[in-house]
Length: 253
Figure 1 (spheres, rainbow, N blue to C red):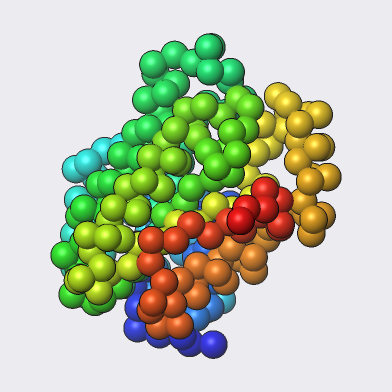
Figure 2 (cartoon, rainbow, N blue to C red):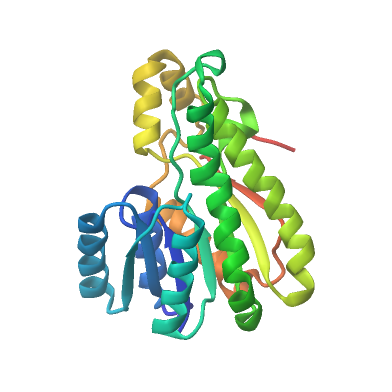
């Protein structure tokens, strides 16, 4: 299982939750990693686990996705250490989950837009020259919150749908350069979803009942493996797509 041997993958929010599951899936396939987040101790712990278990090199970098200069430093550090970038995974996102639209402040909205949409934009722009060289790919994370209009998720949904729109444009613009851009909409148990469950318990239970497979996704096996496929040569003709990993919920034509 070395489909990504020699690759270098940047995973934002790679120290915990879905991001760590993604990191495990990519490491298992031989990719070296750059993982970012806001908590150094968590990133260092993730580095130790990934390197000892999978034998890859991991560069952990503390960075806030809303900080344009910090992202420039992440990309420069990745290239300095590994000499290239083959895959960018924009996973990290912070938002005020469970707050009705009319109770949102501008600060609440800014939190989601800057940590999600702006962060994805900054990373994509800075990584593009290196992705062009490697004929690499971008995997951006969106959400069913935007696709299906989940209660209490207005700022989060706005950020995620902005990311989807930007991804489609990038897929069209970057296709001639051999760079692919796709979007994944997962349904996995995360900290934000835990908060949503606390605020909307009845809707949460209804969501579970509406999943034909009857469970939330496993970050590594259910989400990470699909992202590995999208980053691999097996998906060399896949770009501009939104893939919903939601256990059959929200089926669309």
